Image: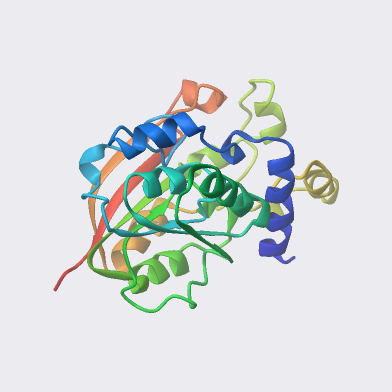
Length: 257
């Protein structure tokens, strides 16, 4: 299965369904960001600490797999030179709409987060990657590519789903029942029945994949990053979060040596 193509179509459908991660920020948030009052998320609820960010004025910033008209416009309004790179044309259209509406400069690029070959080495100062690697089967290439396109001393901010989140039967989770079903690593391609996969496609839901902590954290380190900070998060709509933080974020730095 072509995962990139499948998930491109799925996320286009998510825009039609007004998934919360596809709804653009209002003009009021852009106006506040222009005055220095802003926040963004890598995970469902907890704002990224402002201490993680350098001064955004003139910063070359890549919003990686971060379409939807949410983070990129905020960063642009706060003074960064923003490129948003996403697999979904409809998600990118949300950023383009906000840019036109609020007179922002945002460069939009369509593509798979695992392939940043169109960007030269040392192009960006910061790569911002909200929870999205769960939509691809392999994650280390993302870290390697992020490291390549960052300048020395550049920052990588990532949001992740805790891999333990994937052991449960997703259908039963919707009714609040936690039933352990899946061995890790998890993949919609291999762990679901043909009927369940057909329903995913009919419902416009993207394919999802788990990644071990060794891949998510060790993969950054082996790609040349130093992990500087970390936080965990919950979602009030996620039954798993009654028992453990199902999301986390990392701040990593490319060595300046």
